[in-house]
Length: 171
Image (tube, rainbow, N blue to C red):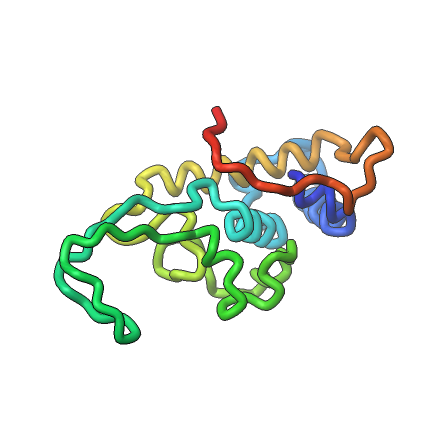
């Protein structure tokens, strides 16, 4: 939500999209999610910038392998750094900017097939809760956007909001 609060025009665009889809019911339903492309783009951008699990589960190299003339010996533990992938200038233009528009019309999804964006992992160890979690994130974010007026109080300027990340567990 912080990224949307810091970007009021993007928040307004999301609100407008929601209002056109849920005109009569006045609350979001699971059946509405597929009709909200900008919301999908926002969620993907949030997963890119702020992965829930910055380092995916560790793996071991099954056999000696050479990568860019560097030998990685068998049984070496390896980690996928999702935080770094989301900020890689070789993969993304302006990777540290909140730009949901980069995902509009994009084929990149979170199913583990595109290694640019794998917030739930990939392959045999992909998160089994992916379908449920992905739907729930959309429903929660859509509900928060629709039901509440989000703004910064106390005279704080948007550009002064502290966006420093900490490595800790949230419950």
